[in-house]
Structures are given as structure tokens and as C-alpha cells.
Image (cartoon, rainbow, N blue to C red; front, side, top):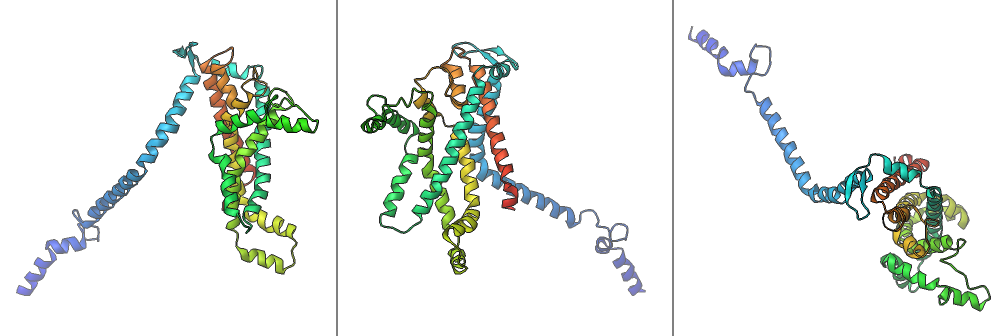
Length: 335
């Protein structure tokens, strides 16, 4: 009998109830450790999120202050009416956007932008490929040459553009002095409709080559030397090695260089404004200088129109970059 009583008491004890569950079917009872572990996991997730935000916080604040807030203010200004002194007078709706689209010289500005971006980016990439191949060779004074090539990129764009203004000067410029000696000058590089765009493109290529060349140098250094040795053993010619090995393996660097150059050249204000400042109107402007002149150096002097042109400019850059990435099938290449 004592054994039977002890068995009954053991069966009805809290320990037995916890083990068997509230209904005896193995269901976890209230107060079990399952919920405690869930709370611990949630606390761990919150701690991880807090730690991530602690590290990312400064970068997020910088992005919010430098990118997000100016973008919001740009859109707000594009739908506002301003006085000639820049004071906001009220809402303008979509009037500024329609005024920009109806501007008679907008087609000329868009054509200038396309010519400027395509010519500078294409010439920069082609020339930088040759410069990068040269910089990867082992020769005496290579370090000095590398330092010298990076100077145009490190210098201020305004200083570089002002230097070329003096080089292009009609009366005293170095270029015209040399051309005059051969009976080919003088040439009005900065005042002629024929020469102003090629003159600006030359400066744009000059300041873009250093960065692009160094991107290609990094890409060339990442190609394994064993690949070239195998190609030589197979009897491949130098052109076949470059076309079938170097160029395909350099494609990631080409993609990076092209996208960054498109963005930089598209937004290149100092070169175009400095070289084209003496010419009235918008005949030789791109979208970035067109936007500036609408607000400060045109008959309109309209900050709202300028902001609307800025919104169009941002959207145009995004479209161009996405079309380029889609055209090069970057998703397949990175997969």
C-alpha cells in the first residue's frame, strides 16, 4: 500500500505534470522555458540591431544630411515660386517643369550633353587602357611617372580649367603660339562655335585619364600571370592575348570606370563653366551649366526653373546609368 500511494503522489506531482504537459499529451505547460528562450532571442536581435545602428549611425546621418535632405529641398524648390532675389513666394505646381521643357534651347543643351559625355568617356577609356598597359611595365622611373600622371586628377578642376584658358588664349596662348609657327594659327579655341566643344572635351579627357588609368592598373594587376603563360605556350599572338584574355578579365574594371566616369563627366561643372563663361546664351552648355545659368546668368533668373532642371538632370543621370548597366548585362557578369 505505501508503494501504491507513493506512485499516485508521484504521478500527480508538479514534476510529472510538467513532463507530461497540462493535458497529458506532451504539450508544453505554462511557465515552461520555451517562452523564456524566445524572449532571449528577441533581446539578442535587438542588441544586434542596436550595435549595427551604432556603427552605421554616423554614415546614415551623413547620407541624410548630404543626400536625402538636399534632394527633398530640391524637389520642394522645383515646385515653388521665387522672387528675383531668391525669396520663396509660394507654390508653383508643375509650372517650372513645363517652363523647362518648353525652353527653346533645351534640345541644343541635351545634344551638347550627349556629345560631351560620350566623347569624354569614350576617349578617356581608350587612352587610359594604353596608359595602364604602359604603367604595368617594369622600367626605370616608373614610380615617378605614376606620380606625375596623378597630378591632373589631384589638382583643382578650376585651376586646371583656368590653366587651359591661358593655353587657349587667342593672342598669347601657348597653343596659338605653336600653331602660328607652323602657319596654322591663330585659332579662337574658346570663341568659335567649331572649336569650343572639342577644346572642352580635351580638358575633360585630360583630367579624367589619371583616375581611369589607375582603375585599369588595379584590374591588370589582378589578372593571374599563369593565364598569360598558358596563352604563350599555346602560341597566341600579342593581339589575341589582349583581345581574348586581358580585355574579358578587365571587364569588371571597365564597368566601374565607365559608370563612374559617366556620373563625373555628366556633373562636370567647373570645366564647362570656366571655358565657356565668355560665351552668351546656352549654345555650348550642358545640363549642369544650363541649370546654373537659369538661376543666376540668364534673362529668366528663376530659381524654381533651375531646381526643376536639376530634378531632370538627376533623373537623366539615373536613366543613363541604368541603361548602360542593362546594356552591359552587369547582373549576369556579377552572378
